[in-house]
Length: 101
View 1 (tube, rainbow, N blue to C red):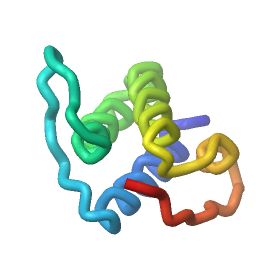
View 2 (view 1 turned 45 degrees about the horizontal axis):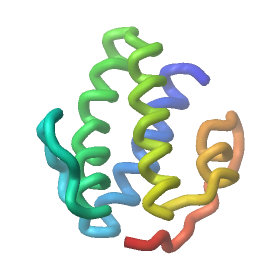
View 3 (view 1 turned 90 degrees about the horizontal axis):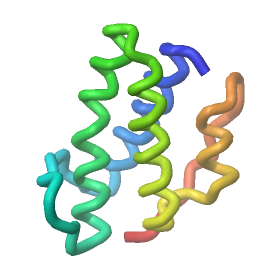
């Protein structure tokens, strides 16, 4: 996966969060989220920073953050593992799911 593909995946997740009404938020690094929405809001907030990493050429850091976001999306039942895998594959059509909150 290259920088443009990472940006494509980021935009998929940004659209997903926006459609679900999930706000963008920074979660304190100490403490635990109290809901799925708090987890997803933190992930939404990570996307803009990930955009910056890609533009700065910090691809490895963007990969790590993308992995975290995808893990949260799977654990909160937003996407299946197959759907998440397809998001990252080159030239694949994205399957849209309803996802639960």
